[in-house]
Length: 266
Image (cartoon, helix red, strand yellow):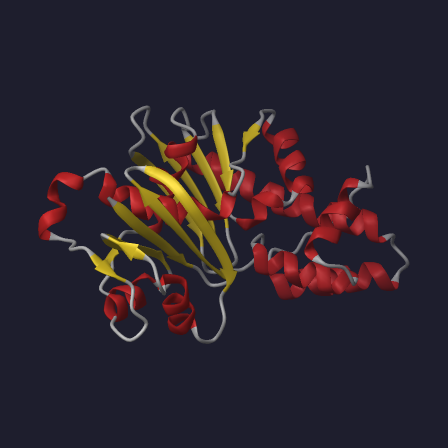
């Protein structure tokens, strides 16, 4: 049985192919102003038995491509437990929001908190800060890792934080110290969110921001524990979407029928 899971986020679209419960392939592309066309291209030529969607754009996939849908929280819980069955807490930082999810020993969601009304501490926040420092996002992590000192970044708002950074630059502060302060501000915000759900180890860090080594190191220092990061931390939502059907495959006959992805036949 082949199941395709898609996670349509604000900054990227992730897809996975799950064959008989085993992860076969993954894709991650930047979201554009034509997400439906991107989804058609991702599905073009794929043979699958069921399509499942999660993320901000999940209803778009349901309405235009006949997909099943699952909430982001449940999808991330399932995806993380595929890689780390012992996981008890999840920190997911994506393009526009941050999620903290507490799991029971059996893997069910016990509690979750989201910072989805402000981009502070998300991928978008990092993009803005990196641009203010004149580097790419990867360069921001490199700068932060090169400094042992952190400039104070007190604003929780992306716009005001950018103004703070510009002010620090104008006063001659070194970029490495500013970058370290930016990373520290995100880590403190994320730590507070984790503690609100009842932090328990093991803690798994997912989302595109989990690729930032400086943030991983800073979080580990603040939390006094090691974070577990999947090799492809962006795809856990898409994987969990696919697993939601695989785990209940006894009921597939009434919900999904074999089909080929056809760009002209949603």
